[in-house]
Each structure stands twice: as C-alpha cells, then as structure tokens.
Image 1: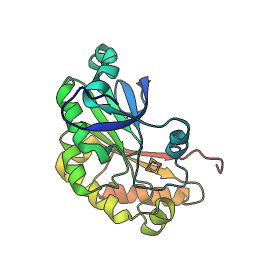
Image 2: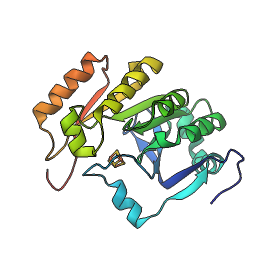
Image 3: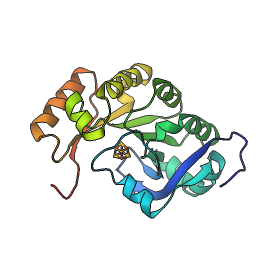
Image 4: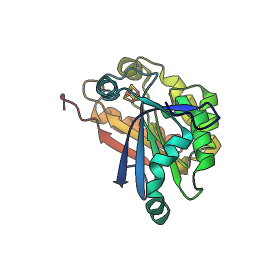
Length: 211
Ligand code: SF4
C-alpha cells in the first residue's frame, strides 16, 4: 500500500489500460479500472477479474505517478484519465483529490452506474469533466431483476447530475441485456432518456455467452 500522500484517501486499483482512443470520449485516454460496486449485475466481468487479480490500494499521488507518462498525449488530444468500474463514485473524495493534483488540461471522465448516495454524485460533479452513465434498464422491474437494486436511485441521481453539470457533459449508455430486455425495450428506454433532456446516448449490446 502506498502511503506518500496525507489525505488518507485510497483507491482500489485493479489495473491501467493506456492509449485508448475513441472508447470513452475525445482523445487518448488511460482507463483506471477499480474494484468494488454496490450492484450485483448478472453479466458483471469485474467480479471475475477480482478473483484473478486482487485490487491494490493506491493514493492519488501514486496513481498520478503511474499515469503522468502520457501527459503529452492527454494534452495534445484532449484526452485524459477515465475511471471505470467497479464503481468510481464510491470514492468521490479520491476523485476530487486526484483532480486537484493533475493538469487542468487533462479530461477526467467517470464511468458509473450512479447507484450511490446523492452526496457522492455532488462531490464527483465538481471533480470530473464528463460522466459516462451505464443506466442498465430504467424499468424498475427489469432493473431490479438485473442488478438487485432500485432504479429510482439511479434515475434520481441522473436528474441530479444533469441539473448540476448539464446534459451535454453526460453520455448515457443504454444496453440491450441478453435475457433481461429486448431491442424494443432499449428503444423505449432511449426515448425516456431523450424526454429527460439527454441527447448523448449510446445504444449497444452487452456481449455475453447468451448473445
Ligand atoms: S455496475 Fe458494473 S461493476 Fe457493478 S456489478 Fe454491474 S457490471 Fe459489475
């Protein structure tokens, strides 16, 4: 465990993926894969990853040292660092600390399910430039069936985030989930999100052994 920063904030790091292009917003990005999530999604790959490679707890300073090698790429392309699942908003204070020590030219992006307390959303809203929200399926029955949790929390937080930073800084990913919803359900979900003011929608298929 790295202890070189005094904040006491640690991040459960599973690994880094450098030089990503076109997968999470503009520019060259480094994905910071983290562990831990409040949901229990049927098709989650994170749980299997954890079995193979336990998370390393790192400070914001230590993480900065790991990713700064790509500073020039980030600044030249409008890219930066993307925090991915697990659930980064479980560590909203860490995100704020990391934002405070990295270049303001780096874009900080967060992939999230928004299944977290609203206070975490408020903290992260001022730390990240863009959010990539995997909304699963907003239908309460299908959401609960797939995640084991309550869609109302996700939807309330999505509205909160929209009101805090504006829909133009939020990409909403809307999946077709094998065994849980259909292409028609996904279209209906996209319509709901458009009614809520979101235009940056990504419709896609989860890839599973049931496709
Ligand atoms: S939100 Fe992502 S990390 Fe969490 S259980 Fe679902 S698939 Fe896994």
